[in-house]
Length: 342
Image (cartoon, rainbow, N blue to C red):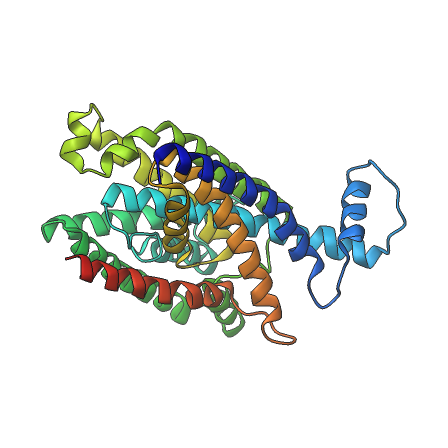
């Protein structure tokens, strides 16, 4: 397939996925224990915006506006953000398995957030995101130091990430088991598996703002990310300030991952699966790949949230369980393909 044809196809796919996103969100609002039609959903939204005055029951309006719509929008933002993080890390580290969950960044963010929640470290609404950000940076630093000490190959970076994940998960378990009461421990452990149950409209603004700003910054470095695909030396020869770009994009990745973890817990494999799917559709150039990751990741996470609510009657599965059911087989395929390539 020629570059021009792939670019045209990629643009069409991104536009199609962008059009599919509102439909996925509408499905997320309509599906549940109380089925709500798309027509009623649209009426409730236009009523709340002050454009119309349709007669809708208060219960339906509350379910739509206070619970399901904010939940679906946060799910979309989280899917977009985690997919963006995966695309950046896979390019910077030149490793197809790199993503925040596999590298232990999500585990570090969870530890930081749990320390704030359980130990009461910090104060104010920004304390949990800041704690998660500090934990994510600590995990990044641990992985980089450990990988460099072990000669820094892609495989060793993944192994360093596994070690970081184990370390920070152990720290989280220690904090919860020694400092939380039974009810608090139960809610924290459920949250760590990923849950959109507690999100509110304030979370929509924070998640969308962080992902939107992250996409703008990433697009500014799109050509540098293309150069990193050929290695640090090639990027340096093309005039890319390698160290500076790495610091900026690693910090941005930590910020986006920490923001998502602080709101909905640790959700794995989105950052692994979506960049590969998007790369297969639109090709490796980051000016197309990054927007594709955002829209495909958003649609994927909204649909995964719907599955988590309907797969078992009267129960809601943690969203991390659903993404793992998709991501682990995908992880295995990439692992075996990599072995075949060597």
